[in-house]
Image (cartoon, helix red, strand yellow):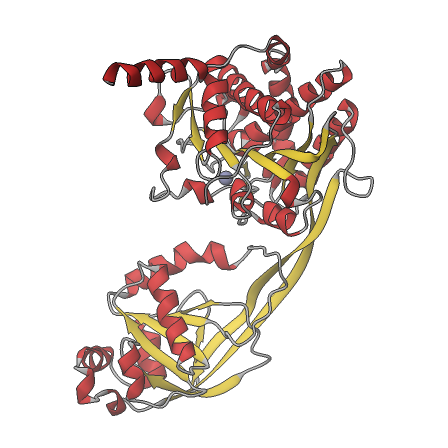
Length: 499
Ligand SMILES: [Zn+2]
């Protein structure tokens, strides 16, 4: 019995090693380090100013990619264009203050506003103290339609901050003021960290304040002045047992506040090209990378070149497109259709891929796979001098066949060490949800995400072409190529057997 099992295992493990397909190999070998370098020297040059979404540098990159698609003979799939254009919206607070009598507190110094709801002028309101803002605290005081002030132990957890503010709104507060019990240093640190997020962000939908008027995080001095008592007294009352109903002891404050929001829209583009399949034209294999990056650093004239992030993925998509298009010209075109897409807005929150899945150019139901490449040109410190590797993420999440195929093509052709560290769904870095494939996976489309890890130049001006390991980039691009070749040419569509 035992012997028989091992005999079966031997047979099945043999059959899991594929035979080299000489046609696939001859095209895989055309993926060229020289061409990858040529494209990347343009995509990641200083002239493109860090390719921030919506800027002229990014548009230059988009023009370069779309001209490449034209030159190699991909079809323009969006009404005769390679661009899928749409608007993104920005909203930034301009004039924000809170007043108590003649004293005015200003945004980014004593107070910090989080939200995007314009108050339409100055609003006068009562301010009610609700202790630490626990559910039971709201039984002691009437807050309907009023502003509330609540204490929080510290400002380290954004999640706690948000849930406490949400509870206050559910209980009927018109606007929420939060102050840290820990220290004003804690408050200052919080403001420094959060500043960048509230200004310069972009979203897919027009910001509308709605019922959520936002949250003010304020320092202890402002809290004392607005509510009209000492901070020690507030702490004492907040710490008291809620059955003793101490909150009423704090008199309501009379305050007024103003929030003026300036909003803008910016036109952005996903860039995609189409290669029609020879047999299964309706089934689509998508290869993606994001061509946006984070722009320049303010103050110093330093371009975040994003050679690895995600210049490396962008040029890999361009090169794969070129080789597949060549194969088709030679009579070896893929059976399934292929879409090569470089998306915008990834660094702003996976916006370009989100827009694509909301407005798919080809039906998602016919989309077989998304192979997403985001950073494949470097090695992280964990792999220094340890041989050629790539992090593989998500291959087993929706389709067991995809995972087996990816392992098999790797063992047959490129033989990289596949590192599955980031594949764990509970990995604290949450990499499975941090690039564009996630928008496809959310829609039940099998994905593989190829990634080289977090290195010392991540999101810095030093992420430059000179630091790229081109032989390794080439090998990884070939690895994606062989998986794509197999998925596009195999008889059966990948089966989705997991959810
Ligand atoms: Zn990035």
